[in-house]
Image (cartoon, rainbow, N blue to C red):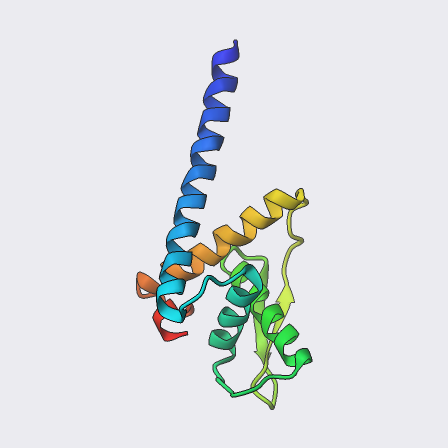
Length: 137
């Protein structure tokens, strides 16, 4: 009776290891591109800039927060949690939440976000038009 539990736990560990390996590979590519290892906030900021489409010399603190919000909504849009409602007169995208995000512990939240970041970059590499290429950031 313990065999199915062991198989489940082994599969969970393998999925976790795969996620971590893919994450380290992304970090290595970003280090190669930008010269330093980005934290999650920096990655979200980069995704936000890519989605916003306007690279400026400076963003205000509020604009940086808005860019990270754009990134989170864009990342979770891939799984149907958000949809793009439109763009305002200043070019800022606005999103609508379609369904609640699942309740998770802190580690699960981090892995959920990492998985969506990875999907974002992997989709771009596969030629998906709605996501960023890390070499273009």
